[in-house]
Length: 531
Ligand code: GLC
Ligand code: CA
Image (cartoon, rainbow, N blue to C red; front, side, top):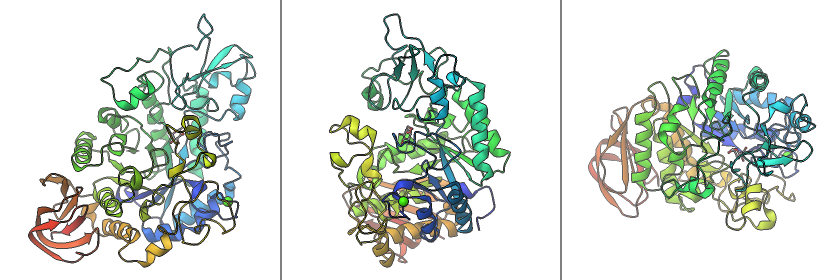
């Protein structure tokens, strides 16, 4: 049974599933909802409280679910509406709530609304999208650049002679959020899924929903700007990041709150400064949780991570709650991005994410330290990889099937089946082997989660910074607990309060008493119970 109480999403650990890659129940090489139902025992055993499912709605898969053709349906490849209802119910029985991914910024160009909209200037749904006349010379209405492709975000519709906006692929036309009918329709979509028991939504590109009403040009970047923006060549001030987006988020928060305080909104708030990030919490009247991309993109060294984390906690409104994550289906897996596959480093990251004050999101496979395989050009599925190869290789390598067993098919699918994306090194890294090994990454992850569940100070307690030598990150939780993580290549002598090591990343010191100083090895971490 799911636990009552509106703190579930603050106390619990959330887990992102990329549905096509979690578990395949019918042997077509693609993960599906019934596959997820079959793995709920694993997730309950691991101890997670909620699942964020990347999009499961009907999609032509130009961007693998992030191009939705019908918001009130389930993609047939993934299952049926009944499967979704069963998943929500079964998950609830396992103490796990389900969040859906909502993509309000754009639809698929195959959505009925868009198919109607392109039929002519007078079409019923024309104004549901962002249309504009060409400049006098026939070129695009302004200088906005698409996130995917580095080219104009405008596509000419030859029939009507107008351009439509697509911040992402040309197959993902942006909705016009100045149109009241669009807002009403999405209220309805939220209710449709809330009524079916979803606990909330992860909102795709939550910072971009409303566009500048005057369609003003973005400002070109200068040397002073962040590399992320320099790569695009302009600051997304007018095609994204408009203040009016917050009106939409407040509207949805009100709607969610009419159900019960346990329904939540989590946002993909892809902003690069913390001032911007904290705005998405509003006065506790916008998002419940906002993904922290400055933290995700921080350099993997203690100073940078710690500074970003502490700054975040200092800036977040008192009623609000931070999010800690290292992996997702866009940025990649922390096991590769930060740790280059190094087992000791992976353990340190898990300890950091799970012992901070805030909600950790694990990405499927993080719990076993799953790495990213190289994907050959001919196996690419991600439009971003196909567009930028070989300079950019896209996002496929972090979306490969979950590695359940060492057998052919990795326990993801039947042995003889070709998986939709190639499998990683499942013989080396898989759930089954790690479940049996008490010193495995999986058991460490599970034990860290269990510890959070046992000790309320580790979820609700304060975060108190503790001085530590260079390369180390040390903090206390709720007075009683001390966490020391050595994110460096050198052993380090550190102060440890009298108490007992509850968890050591290598497990060698588990249960060992502490008193005074100790020498913590390179890339090791410990949690001390100082009670
Ligand atoms: C978000 C999603 C990403 C998708 C994009 C366009 O950034 O996380 O996967 O490609 O939106 O919908
Ligand atoms: Ca399947």
